[in-house]
Structures are given as structure tokens and as C-alpha cells.
Amino acid sequence: MTATYKDLQRETGLSLATISKFYNGGAVRDENARAIERAAAALGFRPNAFARSLRSRRSGTIGVLLPALDNDFHLTVIAGVESALRPSGTSVIVSSSPDADAGAVDLLRSRMVDGIIAVPSPHDVEALARAAEQVPVVQIDWRADDLVVDGVFLDNHRAGALAARHLLDHGHRRLGVVGGDPAVSTMRGRVDGFREVARLTGADCAPDAVLAGPLTVANGQAAMQQLLVLPERPTAVFCANHELTIGAVIAVNESGLTLGRDLSVLGFDGRELAQVTVPKLTVIEQPTHEIAVRAAERIRERLDERRSEPRATGTATGPVDVLVAPRLVAGGSVARVGPPITGPTEA
Image (cartoon, rainbow, N blue to C red):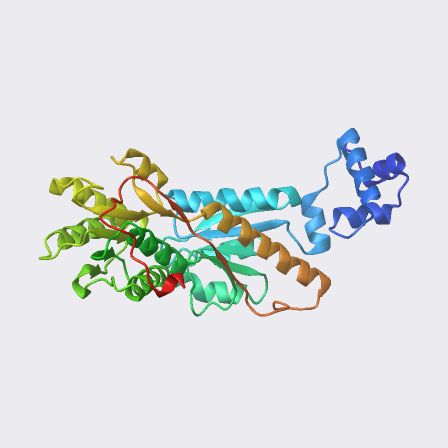
């Protein structure tokens, strides 16, 4: 026979009101919470999640919206969100939105999710904005300007600056950038951060050495090929995205040049790629798991705000952006060509 609240009451000596409050997310004394948990474990009690959601108007689930489910970044986001929410008994529903007709946001709302963590696709921004009127929404990876909600992002400007500083510390003055699409905020931030540090030290990139284009392996390969035939070829190149990095490394290998000797390359993300290149590739790493965990924390904080102000329909405070610091993982693909180049950034 399935254990009930009354069984827990007999086991603990607590009131039904206290037990109900505990299982519906209310605050109870620590000693009472521990007593209820011990009794539930002893009796094999499992709360009826569906009935609880009807009473509390909370489903105990968070939606994760992604453009696709076919790369390590998105899978790491799912794992990070799930691991952060699991201790609170919150589950995760995942939906992908690869095209404009997917209706992924409406699907999540139909499942009564309490909030949504999204890597927003442009075609989902309007639906996410509508959802944000009812539940907390946190965007990650890149900021959609028309979506006025909390966000958790890599500090992309700092990532670009960190890459430039590493190349300058190795004496490189002629720099190139495979920078992706400047219309994408993440790419723009990384390139701007890189060029700002380079410019302040007098080692700015030549205009024809900063290349833009789609965030694809093919474009990374084509851009690196273009840099390799410049009359004054850069001695070091920063690739601002994982796919661009793969393409650039392919182009260097096909050229017959030796990575880290004839040309220095600093890539982005892709520890697996770094492990298979010879020498090991130096990369700027995006702490994706941390970004996912921080996004889950923002969702929990917003839900707590709404619980304390149950009649509120919007967020209790304005949108908050959380920036997560990048990390440089050094390999052997950046050669030392001279003494460090210093400038005002070190003042």
C-alpha cells in the first residue's frame, strides 16, 4: 500500500499542515524537514507530483530551449542545468527549435514549465518574450536584443582581450583574426576585445587581416587560406569560434606549414580538438557547465521572488546579466617570437 501524509503524520508526530507545507515548497523548521525526509525514506513515500502541481500551480519542471541537440555545447548546457536543479527536486524538459515552424516555446508552455532557459533562435524571440510575461526566462550564449530577460553569458570582450594578451606576451605584433559574423553579439565582443588590447599596445591588426563570415568550418578554412597568402602574413591568428578554429587548422595543415612553428594559432573552445593537434592547440575555453549552472540559479532566484510575491506577473526586479569569465588553456600552438609587447593595458 502506498504511504500517505497520514502515515508520515503518525511516524513524525507532526501536523498534516506542516507536512503539506514541506512538500509544497513552504518553509518549515530544519528539524521538521529532516524528520519528514527520514519518515518518507522509511515508509517509501513518494509525493504525487501531478496533484502537487495542481495545488501549487507549479509543475516542478524547467524548460531548456536549444537551437539543436547535435553538439557538445548544447548537450553540456542540458547536463549543467539538470545537475543544478536536481537537488531541489526540479526536473528538466528539453525542446529544440531548428526552424521557424517548430513552435518549441509553445510546446514547453503547454507542459506547464515553471521557467525557461534558452539559447534563443531569432525565430523564437517573440514567443519567448510572451512566455516571459508568465514565467521566468533566462537566455544564455548570446543576447537577443528584443528579449528583455535575465541572461548568463561568457564575458566575450574579456575572452578576446585574453587571447590578444597571450599572443602579445609571446612577442607577436602582426596579428590576424578569423572572427565570424559581426552581427552576432558574441563574435563582435570577442573581436572588439582582441583588437582593443592589440591597438593599445601598438600591435593592431591590419584591416585585411580581420576576416568575417559565417560560423562554419568551411568559412574558417577559407578565411585562413586568405590570411596565408597576404603579402605580410600574420605571425599569429586568433579564431573566435570552435567551428572557425577547426577550419583554420585544416587550412594550416593543408598548406604544408607547421602549426606553432611557421604560424601561431589560438583557437576557441574544443578541448577535444586541442588534444589531437600536433602540437596541442592553445584555446580560450568557455566554461559551458558553469554558464548552465548560473542560469539555473537565476531561474531559482526568480521563482523564489514570485513565490514571495504571488500576485506579481512580471519579474520583481529588472533584467540581470551574469558574465562568466573565460579560461585560457595553453598548448604549444603559440610560438615565442620575441619579448613580450606591453602597453597601457598593464598600467
